[in-house]
Length: 254
Ligand code: ADP
Ligand code: MG
Image (cartoon, protein in one colour):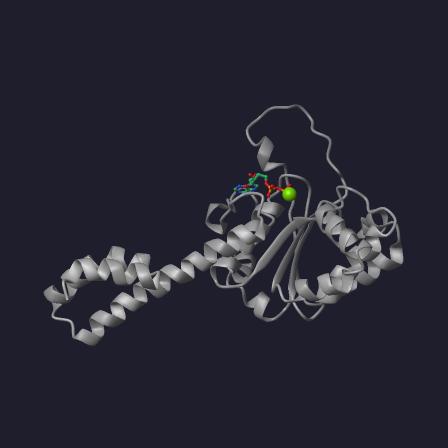
């Protein structure tokens, strides 16, 4: 075998690009540390496997359609006193996904609800879970389209195989007509089967207004919080931090 050239060809054929990139350095280490042939082969394969896994992670991050990239490490718990770091860290360990339980973030605009939702979602992607992110209004549009095409149950079943669905911005726009019912079906289809992260600027006591129906809202909250971490965020908007804009109207409802 004429070494390097064959390797380049073989790695290309097998679609092992990162193996090719790393094999030179691994071979040097193997010679320096007198690795066995088996150790060297294992190190090569390990490199390719971890590259593939992280590629898979990035592919899942793209597929999840997050509106931005956020990390738990970048969340300033000094600024946001109302959130307990240990509770968020516990969520970040992702046991809640295995347990098919939920997380709910409640609080006024700019308090970090979307940040925490995305950060947990990205973690889940990198840990191997599929995730789907959208605002409540986008979920309703999507489910409405499926309903009109007679595919609502198929769509809910398909979503049921996604271990984490994130529903952002519940409450900014009140649901009209069928929307509340579609939304209820999304939440109830996942109850004890797969996880939801939901964010809202409205306290539960005002979800009746959001859904235009107290009974539907109560039934949904019941399913949502039965197995859930509910986190109430307080304080001023992080977006307005350090800016003197006079008094910004608060929702006064969370
Ligand atoms: P919400 O969804 O509650 O309206 P966001 O999560 O979108 O708020 O936060 C608004 C902006 O402020 C984002 O860019 C977010 O990354 C940032 N942010 C909010 N809270 C914090 C925090 N405690 N530490 C770091 N960044 C924060
Ligand atoms: Mg938000």
